[in-house]
Length: 256
Image 1 (cartoon, rainbow, N blue to C red):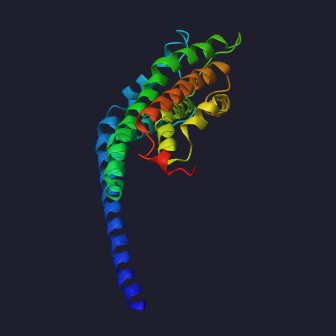
Image 2: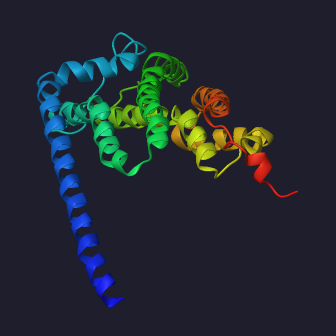
């Protein structure tokens, strides 16, 4: 037995070392790609910031502009946005590297199941960010500007605005991943589809609680996130019913 154990230990160490080498290689590729994408993003960082600030600037009065309360903010805010945009645009490649690292350890049927979910997660993430920019931001900023008290000039700091919108970009991007999360929960057996459908009220309440933490403290923003999240939850249930099927003969294997 000791001989078998000594033979297994070098094999396990060699396997672990090879995984670590492959992980390092894929991390280096990710950093290189993000760096390459960051070059044009940083070159047009000011134009990129103007585009991101457009939903707020379109709602501000004509004589009102964004301000910089720090000396370095006019440089650092666009620079920070350029790096974030590089990661954002590189996300498909980054997720592909994660997939390529994990895929060899999956069975063939698991790879056929996981690949569509990977593609769906990328599409849904970008759809959530686009929904935030084109739908949520105009309505939300219009509401904020309209509720500004008389005698108060709304002069938003550019750094604070950037932190605010980046948080919402990623919040809506992650919120749109609900269908993928629902399918994964059903596929792994952690939650049964019947259990999800029977607890819609609790899910709806939980969605509004999560939306309250992720959005500004106003009912409009909370509702604009919660309603799509719940609709995506229902879409996830439909996807789970189509993609997740009980194994053949499951009913026959159950005890009488």
